Length: 197
Image (cartoon, rainbow, N blue to C red; front, top):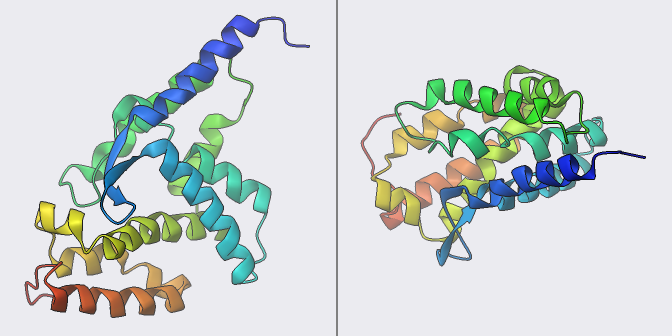
């Protein structure tokens, strides 16, 4: 029986702070932006469903754990927009945030940092699926909101193609679906067509 419920409950409130991190992704057809906790839940459910739909031989337990801890570093670092120029260094602040959470006296997950590193740098089928679905969900929300985030941020077709190109290798069906929707988004004026590929 844990003997420091005060520390445990303080840690639970630390985790709850992920609800305060707003993303730039609009949900419900563009009514409001989602927060990172909502995204983490959606990511976990989507990964679970897709792994079964594609009949992938993965550890569902590991997949769900990776999805749930994927954005924990954003509690300290905030969310970094996919097309931000400083995206390549965002993981440094996130890593420090996860280390802080792991060292909290109320944390019962001893391998939190190890799991976070795996989802960040690993190349298992679980991490590959996680990365694909992490890109698919905001893309899907952009399609559902008539490109609201893309239009607000002036996102170009070439940026979207570059950010999602890696999906073609491991999940070509998903990538083909995305390409068709990218072309439709350009035709509808939701994405700027800069003529680059």
